[in-house]
Length: 67
Image 1 (tube, rainbow, N blue to C red):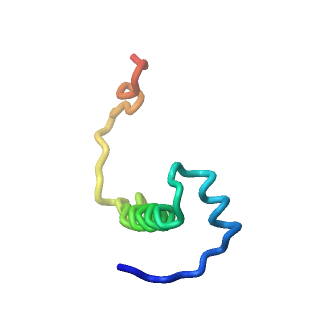
Image 2 (tube, one colour):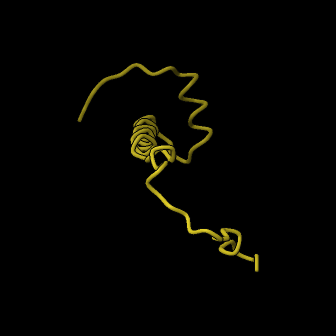
Image 3 (cartoon, rainbow, N blue to C red):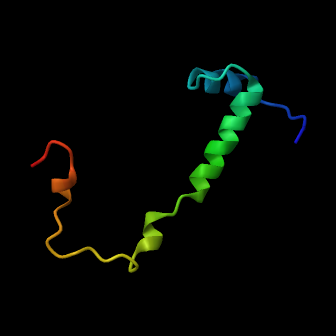
């Protein structure tokens, strides 16, 4: 979709420092993708009461290098 928008130049320059993209178009595209991805994530608090953890479950054993 083609559209015209006015962007804050200072904010755009700062945002470009944190990414590998070189154009404003790609910067806006990346920002929108990250925004949508963030909002699609299920809030962990919504799982309360829906997940049961086995008694005696040791999550530390699953970590790499911990035996």
